[in-house]
Image 1: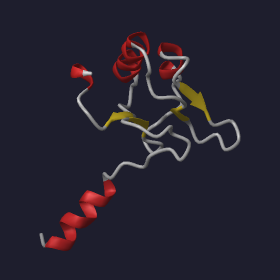
Image 2: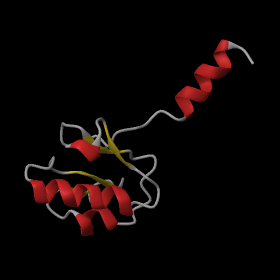
Image 3: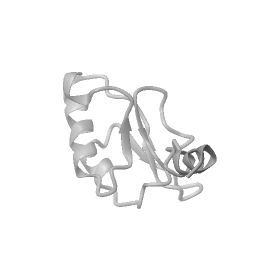
Length: 93
């Protein structure tokens, strides 16, 4: 295996943030989202569904309260494909 092979592997697993994600630490990887909807059920104030393109769920709004952060963690936990990402440590926020 040469360096080019490692680059191809890395690019294959690179996340693809949904373009409608609210700016911030939490986001949905649109390649991994299977439209399960548990995120919107767990954190209805923080997730939306892209009805225009049907490309999946996205973070509509970053958590602003302790309750919203708790719900965001529940959404991360319930997502069957682990499509909800966190650029930081969710356990210490």
